[in-house]
Length: 128
Image (cartoon, rainbow, N blue to C red; front, side, top):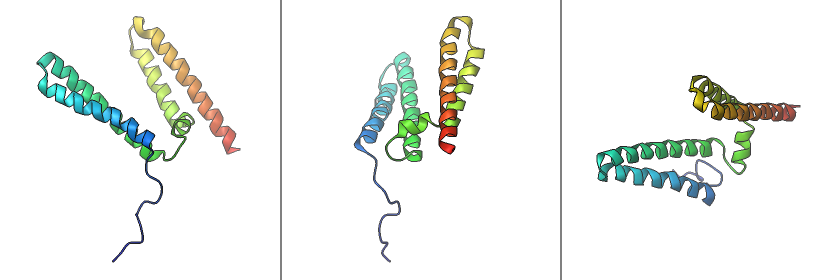
C-alpha cells in the first residue's frame, strides 16, 4: 500500500531556526564532554551548563513546534498566558529575594506587567 505523500504537509524549518538550535546543541555536547573530562570543580560547572543548554534546547524546540512559520516572536509577545506567567514569576521572585536584589526584580515586575497589559490590549483589539 502506497501513501500519497508525507503525513505532515507544510514546509520544514527554516535555516535560521536550525542554526538557532545548533547553539544549545553544541553547548550540551561541549558541557557534557567537559563534565566528563575536566577536574571535579570544573566538571560540575560544565555539567550544570550542559543541563542549562539542554533545557534551552528543549524549550526552543517546543516553541518552534507550537508556533510554526514566521512571526514566532510576535506571536509570543502577543500571548496573554505567557505574559501573565512571566508576570507571576517576576512578582514571586520580587517577594522572595533579599533587599539587595529587589531593584532588579522591581524592574522585571514592571516590564512584565507592561508586557501583560500590552498582550491583553492586543488580544482585545483583535477580538473586536
